[in-house]
Amino acid sequence: MTWKCVRMCVRVRDNWGMAPLIGTQETTLGTVGARSAVVSCSDGEIVAGIAEAERTLRAVMMRQLQLIAEAEHRGLSAEHGARSMVVWLRELLNINHRDAKTRVVVARNVEDRATSYGEIMPADLPATAQALAEGAISLEHARVIVDGIRALPEYARCHRVGEVESMLAGYAREMPPRDLAKVAERIRYLLDQDGAYRDEEAQHEARELHYSTARDGMTVIKARLDRETGAKFAALIEPLSAPRPEADGEKDPRTAGQRNADGFAAMLDLALDSDRTPRAGGQRPQLAITIDFNDLKRGLGFADEHGMPGTLHSTEQSITAENVRRIACDCDVLPMVMGGDSLPLDVGRGKRTAPPQIRVALLQRDGACAFPRCDRPPGTPDAHHIRHWIDGGPTELSNMVMLCAHHHRVIHNHRWDITIRDGRPMFIPPSTVDFRRTPRPGGKALPAAHRDNLRGLIPAQRAPAGES
Image 1 (cartoon, one colour):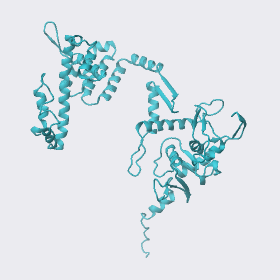
Image 2: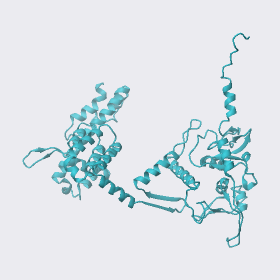
Image 3: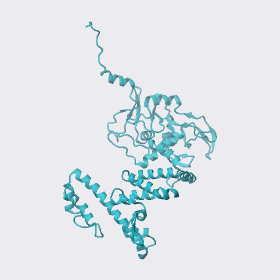
Image 4: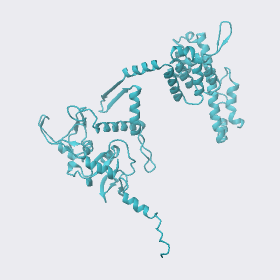
């Protein structure tokens, strides 16, 4: 490595005492000379320089921790009128409260203390202090170790703290703080199983979930789940909220929060579709919506086609007719005659738009979603009517197609057209997507098409010997 590439690190080490560590020409990365020196470094030198700079910063942090510990012994925070060491350090360094607290807590455990006779006593956590001084671990590593030691039962803190601390400091050199915290918790579970069990019971007692409707009509959910329930939730939502496969080189545009919301919606679909879901009043859980039949037929329509929205019974909120049409693609439609006071006068017979035998056939033909290049999305698929049932479309295989929740919404909102050609769905994009509106084949590949494509690869059968 050349002198130019390591000059910043050497200058920092030379100024190890109270001299300023930043601001000299050699240590200021913003200067023209430093910039040109960095540009002239090779790839290997840049990688080595980044790692060396991190080690140096960590070693400097250890020096600061020692100064913080000494400042606390001298009572400097009280002299400056601060109510605590943490508050004084936060204001002195202009850092967050949590960061200031971490530095104070760690400093107390990694300082070398002197007795009244001048004898130097080792730090409470000597292995951690050594790793910090070497620049092998970060401040966050040290905080995890301190918290892990504090969480041990009393007998372990008296008799096994050295063993545990040395083990955690060794792991800290090899893994990030998040993984180290899991190791510390596992050690605590091993040495204090009764305490860990009591904590789990306390978490179960502290469980809570609240939901409410915001002013804009959206539902707000806030929950704190015990670790068992949280693990179940994560196991269910993670595969349901995974990014969709790239389409035409474009990644899933949804944010992580949107993907989680869609995964949660898919979880609800699965629960509603399950026969094991508890029944209320003899009925399976259902999304009940009331809407005028003529408004449902019109849907969103054009500007001159005005209609009343529907009503979601469980939240008493409004919902547009267009979204009701989407939901009605695969649900029970219950005709009901309403009086002038909106009370039911007569109820007709429910009609499932996609009976089980139709769904089985659709899944066989389309898979979980027939939309082009949709890679078997999670969740319960919807059986969509190509010609809507409200408009007189029949409930039969030639008029239906399987769609995932996302592409079902795309079809309705962006006005894609669908036809069935040779037993396979064809999706016609709107002009905003393809001005030529070129049909795109969807659904699963047909076995016959596979056979035709592969037939040319099958070698010709040889004639028996002696035959021409």
